[in-house]
Length: 190
Ligand code: PNS
Image 1 (cartoon, protein in one colour):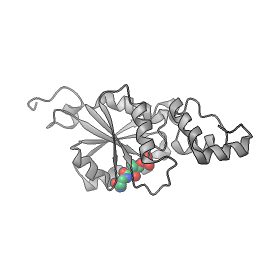
Image 2 (cartoon, rainbow, N blue to C red):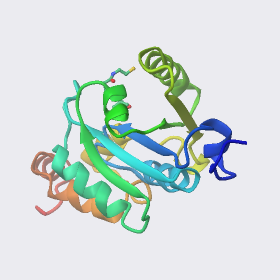
Image 3 (cartoon, rainbow, N blue to C red):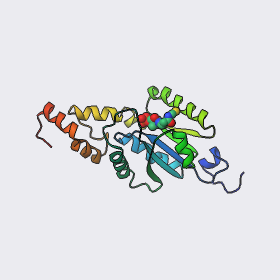
Image 4 (cartoon, protein in one colour):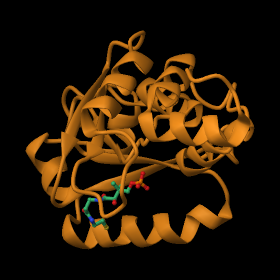
């Protein structure tokens, strides 16, 4: 057994390191309870987890990067080995800059698998030492996505239980959504 390695994931996967740092990258537009569940579970198996918000996404986000970082920061406030960062460019470059050993991603259903496999293999080609750790989403979040949360909220449906309360508050404050909801539902302006 190598020198000082602890009897943990670091010993099994990364025999030459004492601590394992992982990056959980994503758009988080906005963070959902599914993301937060994955962060909490990921934080239990690595020493430090960096949640990394992609800045230069080709998607048109609803929330600014700053807003997404603020929501994530609030969401992980009780977990002391998690930090929030932003990145642009290649994920593997960010991973190297942070001297992390792994990328964490969640898989909700078989439909996620192909995309995730493609990314994991491409990242491995770019950085052969980098491992991708996949966690299966909790069953109660396996149908939850940021995209559907935004769509349901915009159309006046309830997203209770899918995202934290503070995300619902942010959705309500969002100008575009407020106007649309008022027209569609005749609810008093928020
Ligand atoms: O939450 P998302 O939108 O599914 O996250 C996608 C993300 C941010 C993980 C992916 O788009 C990414 O890593 N982008 C950074 C650019 C990059 O490295 N692209 C090559 C990935 S194989």
